[in-house]
Length: 457
Ligand code: NDP
Ligand code: 2IT
Image 1 (tube, rainbow, N blue to C red):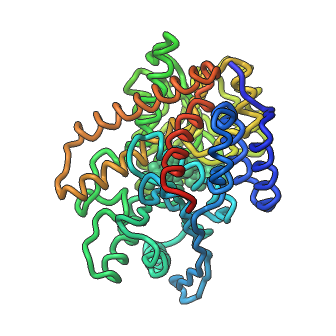
Image 2: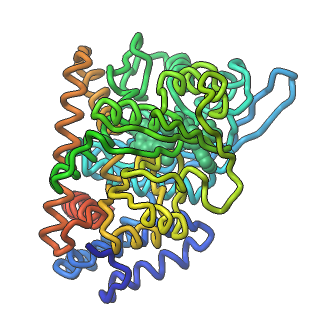
């Protein structure tokens, strides 16, 4: 299995170079853009004239719209803070903009653009009618009181509400934005607009328009994708070991589903360090610490004396030094660099499944592919979250709700189809088991057809 690092098509090279120049202050966006454009070369080569004539690639890499705004809020001591809010509405050619909101101090335009760009392709892969967008703020929710979180969310929505709507742009959660934040955001939208527009946000609470299984969907979907990929290679999940980075929404439900399939999850992490439990991580304790107490993963040791905690410090996070069959990065971007990928391969891993968005650097991915690691790329493997968000929108439109089993079954079918699409496209264009190339190609074919059909806009 091989990655692709070099391309020859002049049109593609030209667009990549110009996009890099124009966005030279945006490394994460450049990384995501270059990865996609590099792998679609065989498709571009076939239809170069049509694409060139309509400026298709130039339009693809330029967001339809970027909104940035001031978010002033008052803390519990009466002090005023000013954060920056973003919404990148990248591409709505196959449906309303759709994608999460991230609240994290590292948020900037480059990170917003890479996430929104990835989202276009991910959403296309789901087979559902949703375009690509992303938003958020450099607000740090850590250590804030509930009242401060509410004040911030209300101020954020005061501006965001001008730009969203159930047929326009539908935000959801991402890092730092879960059910609590979506509740405050939805409340403020409803108050300002004076309508009960349930489909304007997804990831809502079950009492006011949320979908069963949305909370679990990204993590569960990741494991469904891994199951399909490994089954195709005659590998059973039962009896395997795994390590999972992160201990947030995606990581927790990936761990839960992995365990249901008989995988022993040896370690999980947060931004400070990781816990290792040779008996297998007790996921209920992680849920209690993270979902209820909003504490640190180190607290796992309070109830599990035999577990070990390793603090970050080294250039390679200690989590990735733990030997396991399956590696599931579910925290943040560029978590696994080349050095880290080498340790993972040396430790004998057989598969890597990206629950987070772009958790592996480009050289890390190429190293995995060169060493025959079965690699499940983020835009396919973590699409279960947004797919279930789209199912939430369907239910909001119907004003009727499916059972947990119905949504979960639909999610499983969607993930299996996404795997099949990635595989079919990879094989058709000679990439064999390179599902990253397959995902990029399958998504690009759909988006490009929609963009061509709609003219130069
Ligand atoms: P959460 O906020 O629930 O959890 C994030 C987890 O990642 C936490 O454990 C956090 O640790 C850790 N983390 C965050 N930033 C860093 C960092 N800079 N370095 C190390 N660890 C970090 O977010 P989600 O679980 O929702 O999101 C995780 C990833 O999955 C993101 O990449 C997101 O874009 C992606 N994703 C999310 C989807 C969703 O539906 N929520 C859908 C598809 C993808 P700490 O608490 O210490 O900050
Ligand atoms: O990265 C993602 O796909 C998400 N954060 C979920 C987006 C959504 O609209 O549910």
